[in-house]
Length: 155
Image (cartoon, rainbow, N blue to C red; front, side, top):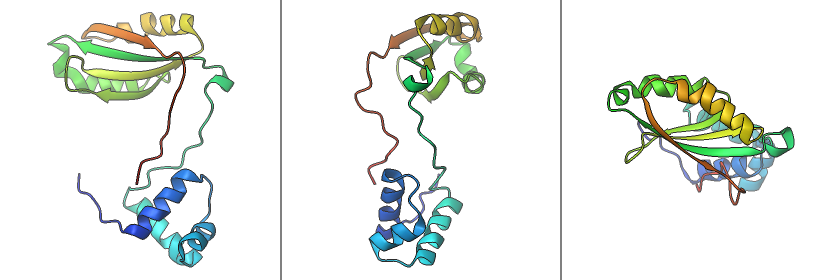
């Protein structure tokens, strides 16, 4: 993937957008010394270039009843490794899986999963995750507490 050129003004815009969700182009322009229209054009270019992918709403998972977070390390069978894309596509359909990473090392995937409670994770594991073909092993780690979680990149 080609890296697109961004300058210091773009970096300042990105930093403000990450740290102050909902901030508008006028307020950003005021803080960095650009007119609202010039700032809006830069933001639009950053979107068009795919640098800004989206501006998600952050929901507190525990306040909506998703009290359990699990990191699952998934190792596929040697035959299953030829179907990495199939596994990735299958887990992307599970609403419980928030993140899925392909790893280099002892395991093939790292999944971040949320459920109501341990019982719901057990049900997800036995009825969905373990039913996927090619799984050799799943090691699950239950998160006790969040120390730091951010989507803000150090621009």
